[in-house]
Length: 333
Image (cartoon, rainbow, N blue to C red; front, side, top):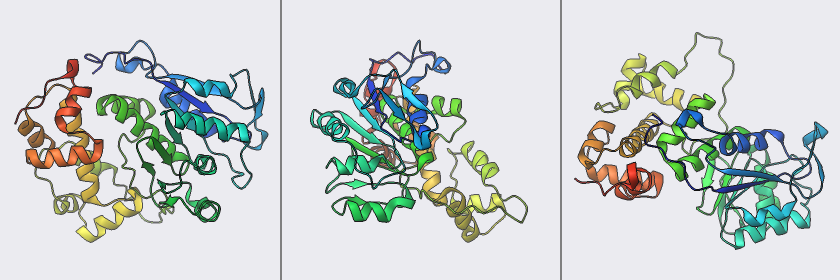
């Protein structure tokens, strides 16, 4: 799998660690962006990651530990991407130095990413007025009260506005950071990272962030076996009815299980998996548009173009030029 990958130019990710920051989101950012990726055959990490703090010593959430020995906020001036993790005391204003660092980083064109309630800091800095964003579902009402000009979407995993990306609850930070890796380096690299993490490679940002999953008092009804079966047959003309038949349930019951366990519909999941497969085929060097469409189960070249553009923001040919072997020539029909 690693063959064909080349080390990309260093992209500088800077993570602001403020007083009371949640360690989990800091860990997500350093794990996803900062660690070497030998499983991809790359000599180093995908990004150049630096932590920074507004003071020489910063206590993490509930004083669990103190972070010292990292650069000050001047580090944001070299960031290509700025990551702002969350903290639990969201009604307490951020320090002026932190807000200024966020504003000036965005003003010079860097990408800004918030994880969990880090969106409060972005809103306080004025970056989110009139824009779509999300935050942890538990804090949605508070967020609306404090920042009524923001177009809050409380029932999604993450929101990608291009230069500003916001994640919902803590676990959604993984989804958003994988989305960033996929956007920067392609589906094949993102899949390699997700396998290392033993984490789902593709959960669309529009999926629900909060899904009720009570401990069952009936035999296990996990969708995992069905999903694995379907992933091996994406090129076949699978339908929701086929999935229901395989699971030995009605389509209505299957729909309820997908909503309960994945926060999405069977059709949306199936389409997302097919688009991800199409992207991997393009990255691996397949040059014929009709072959990619057929092998991924997307059917026609027109449907492939529409779906890939919707999910990646790129046409299949542009995706190939960016992530294909050697830059790639345009795909042929």
